[in-house]
Amino acid sequence: MSAGTFFDDDATVSDVAPLTDRVNSEPPVLRGLSVTEVMVSTALFFPVWLGVGFLAAHLFHRWQIFILLGIFGPLFSVWASAGLLASLKRNRPDHYYWQAWLWWLHRHGLWTVPFVSHRGAWDLGRTLPAARSSAPSRRRDTSTTWRLRAS
Image (cartoon, rainbow, N blue to C red; front, side):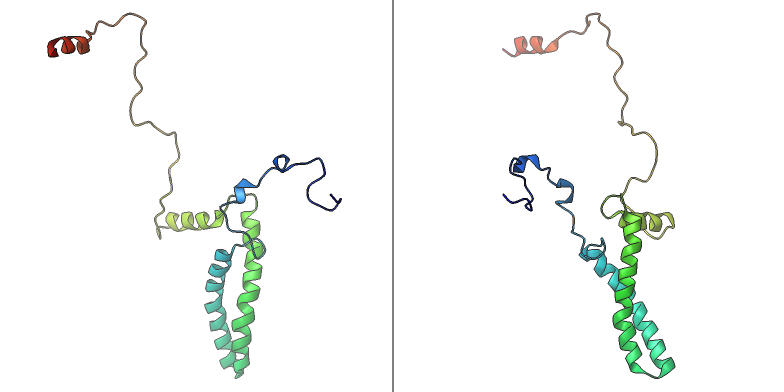
């Protein structure tokens, strides 16, 4: 093998650790955002910039401003928000800010989340049995007497 290949001559496939934590997650496509996150941020910024472009077009009496701000405004906003969201997400699990957004909505009474939202120790829901002593039990075994009666 040449020196520029991924595997050395003495390395095998079993020597290379797989990236199993990335198997079920969407790949990043734009500065760390997945396709879904890019679409959501575009859907948020597009109407905003269309409104700004509409107001600017009426203010300056040029319809071209409406088109320019409607196209390039969301493009630059998504690019900038991707950098901001990447800094928020750094060293955190996938979809961290989605969960943080849902928690924020829940705290302000705007949404309910199915997450566990209390702090404290978990409880089994029952008490543990008492410690057993080493003394023999006085209970009678009824299973043998039932079998004798049944036969």
